[in-house]
Image (cartoon, rainbow, N blue to C red; front, side, top):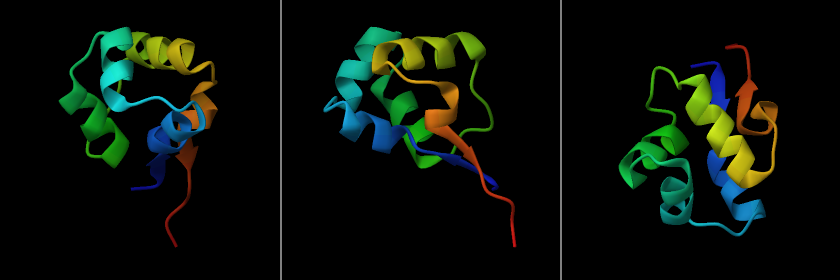
Length: 69
């Protein structure tokens, strides 16, 4: 898939655990894990907004487009 999720990178930069982020954002830790692994088909804008707010980042810091070769 050409969309890369860099949520694990942002969590490491902010020294935050998935559990802490899930509590702040209001979604399960399992859903955070699925998002980190890129195994989701989509993410709601309100969820993305809460993630960005919690991590103090922009959506482009979490999502990256890399065209397939």
